[in-house]
Amino acid sequence: MSLFTAALHPNVGLGFLVLGASLHDILTRLKAEPQRFPKLDLAYSQTDPVTEPVLLTLPANGIRLRFDGPEQRLRLVEVIDFTKNRITYQEKDVAKPANSQGAVGSPRLGGDTANGPAFKNIYHRLFGPTYAGEYIPPDDTGNGNAVGTYILSYPGVAFSFPLPKSAYSPNKDVVSLLSSPASQTAASVAIFSGKSWAHARDTLWDEILPSVKSAILFNKSKEVVPDEISLVKIHGGGRLQLFKKWTNASTWINLGETTPQDLVAELGPPDAIYRKNDQRMYIHKTRTASHSRSRSNGGDYRRPDDLTDTDQSSAHTGSDDSEDEAIEDDFVGNVSGECFFNYFYLGFDILVSPPQPASKTPPSQVAALNGKEVPGSTPFKNGTADRLVATKMVLHANVPGSYPFNRHRRCRWEIQYLATDNPDETLDSETLFDEIEERLREEWKSTYPLEEDAKRRQRGMVLNRGWGDSPGSSIEFLGGWEDSSGGVAAKKFDGSEDSTTTLYGFPGLVFEVLKNGFVSAVTVY
Image (cartoon, rainbow, N blue to C red; front, side):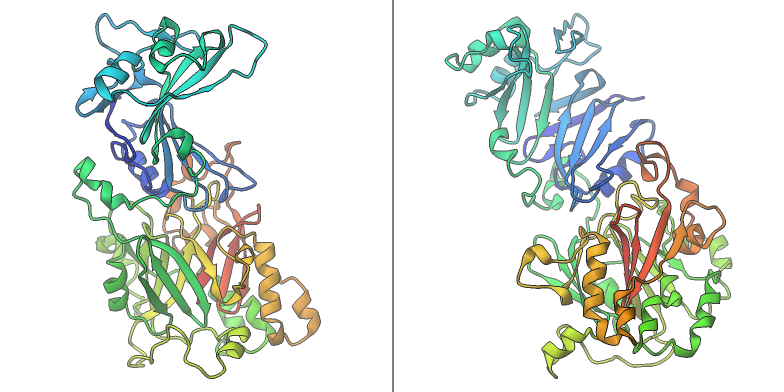
C-alpha cells in the first residue's frame, strides 16, 4: 500500500478531501482506489441516519472524516495518525516522515510514540504565531497527572497537543505551555471552515460551505463539476422545481411535457442511460388497466403499476452501460424507447417515455389557485404519441445502512403543496414517513370514496432488495447492484443488510420506506 500523501489547505481541505464535498463523491473516489484506501469504516446513527452526523474513518491512512446528516457534506477532516501518511503545507512536511532516519517520536496519550508535528515546527516554521488556544481538561479532575488537550488554532486548521493538567496554567503564554517535552508533539490536526476552532465548532454542522468548484484550483483537477441541485420542491400535478446550490436560480420539470433535450440543456448529460425492459411486475398492471387513466377514486392510493418504477437505475460502474453492445442486444424488443436518465451525482433518475398524463393537482392547490395559472406550467408541446418526455422522477435519499446506499448522492426534497407558515412543519427528506402519511391523507381525503378509507392506513408493497432473483433486486430495479454489493454500501453495524423496504402510494407520489421509518426514495409521477 502506497503512503497517503496530500497537501493541507486551511479552510479548504486535505488533497482531494475538500470541505463541502458530498459523502457520495468522497466514497466513490475512495472505493476507486482499493490498494491506496484498503479499509473504510462508516459509522452513523441507526435511529437518526439522516439528521445525525456520519463518520468515515480510513484506519490504514490515519484519516477521519465527518459529514453532516441532512446534506451529507464533508465538514471536518482530521489527521489522527501521522505514521500512516505524509501531509505537506506549502510544499513542506508538517511532520517528519515515519521512515526518516533518526526520527524520535514524542509520547502520546496511549503511551506509544508517533512522528507527529512538533510544536516548534508548527509555530515557528510553518504557520507562525497565533492567539492563545483553548485547554480541555481531562475527565478525571482528581488526578493531577491526568492528561488533557490543548487546542492550538489557526484560521481553518487546529492542532491538538496532549498537556498534563499539572502543566497547564491560564497565566502562561502558549510558547511556555507547549515547550515542555510532554506536549511538544501534536497528536492530531483538524481542517475546518472558520477563523478558529472555538468559533467554527458552534456552526460546524449547519454553516453554508462554498462550492467545491472554488477549491478545484488547489488539487489542479480538470474534472467538470456539474451545477449541484440543493433542493427539489414537489408542487403536485407532476411539477417539480429544482434549485441550484449557491445561486438564486431554479429550473422546472413538468412531467409529461419536459423533453430529453430540455433535461440535457438544464442538467447536463446523464451519468448513464438505462433502457427499461423488465416486465416481471406487469401482472399488477393488468389488474388495474381498466382504470389506469382515472385518478378520481381511492384506488389511486394503491395502484401497483405506479409502484413498480420506484428505483430503476443502472449500475454505477464508471462507464455508460448504453455503450455496451451486449447489453443493447437485450433491449431489442424495447420499441417504445423508454429509458432512465441516471443522474448519480445529482441524486435522482428520470424516466423518459411516451407522453402520459401527469397526476392531478392537489385539492388545496386547486382551491388556492382558483383559476389562476399554475406556477411553472407550460403549454403541452407537440403532443404526439411517439415523442419522448419525462414522465417520472425518482429522488434518492442515500440513507446510510440502506441497501442502495452510495448509488446516488443524497437529494433533498420538500412537498411544497403541504407547506405552512411554520417552517417546523415542513415535510421534507428528513421527515419520518408516519408524519408525511398523516398529512397526505388529510390533503387527499376528499378523493376517498368513504371516510373510513381516509382513516385506514393503506397496504404497502414489500420489497427485498437483497434477494438474487426477485423484482426487488433485479436489473430493472437495481441495475445489477448485486455485482457490487457489500462494504460500506450495504452493511450495518452488525454486518447485516437492511434490504427490505415497503412502498406506499399517494396521487403523484410513491414512497419507499425503510424499517426505521425514514424515506429511502420518493417517485414523483
